[in-house]
Image 1 (cartoon, helix red, strand yellow):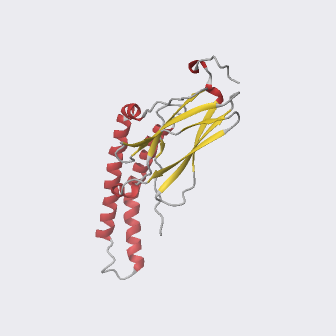
Image 2: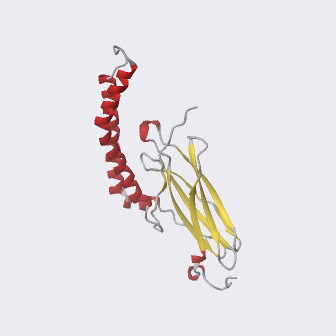
Image 3: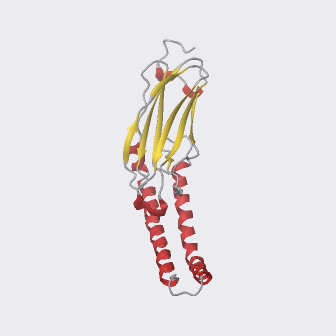
Length: 214
């Protein structure tokens, strides 16, 4: 057991661990995540979280959650999150909401966790700008593809369906390399937000939405 007279600031909580696990979506309206905390310390530990949910388009903080509890030795606690999909104006680049997570531990209540989203978003401002600029270029390139398909390969006036499809294939082959490059750039930039394991400014979620046919 922890010694009763030890101050919380002196306690080594390296025996506590957590993981964020995405779950297979059952609907395209939201994607679920579980935050799982494991206690391998020699006694019960109190915990609290600050979970800040962000809009995937504007990156603004939408709401904060502060769940808390206690975990017995060798026990686990789980918090379930549902990240909603972004607004329709994101088009085919629609994503689920993002979130920041921080966890505080204590051997007696209350445990405290610092909310980090405002500070972290300030640090990520330049990177967010690169992502947003690339997204605008991506959406313009996709709109250009759709305009070219409609103008060059109209369904009316063509003799055969095969001719329409051949025309569309040729237009896509011409324009899709640009789209693929923009998609790769987006993935690379976003990976920089999510690759720093242990970084308090790690961004979770924000996965692309795969629209489902009713």
